[in-house]
Length: 183
Image (tube, rainbow, N blue to C red; front, top):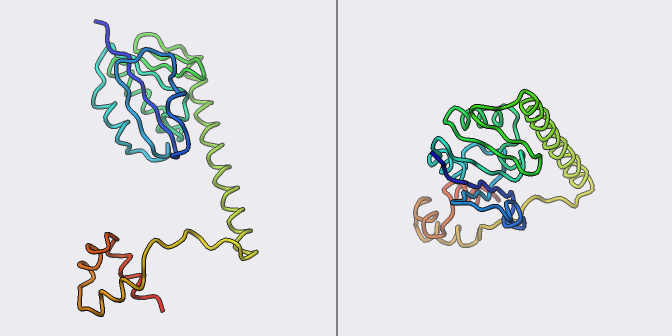
């Protein structure tokens, strides 16, 4: 029985484009995530995993789009194969099928997964170093506050509870508490 051609697309930021990832491949359905690959629970990936059936072929642009952690990557590939689903990583030109996955492809998958995991760790390390340096120079202040502290205080003085303030201003309860705690 011939299954579906299914695409999985993931971008980490709003600026990244999803269209180029599987351009030119005829797909029956596409699952998409706009979230970091380090997050294991992703709506698009969860939908894909719930949808796949034996005989389907899942197309992914590159290994890092599916997972950034080697262990998670290998467990996902194993899950696909155990369900009789083939997996094709286009950038690396690696294909995995339930009945014929070569040891060389398995080795390449593991190595590339480890390389992507290492790359992510290096990016995070450089980012932390850059933030520390900026803080030292006094130019890094963190993210700008999205909370109007004056509005929180005004509503509190008017007698509203923390929960009602949070609901009224559409912010979290902890944000209300933090705004009222700060001098």
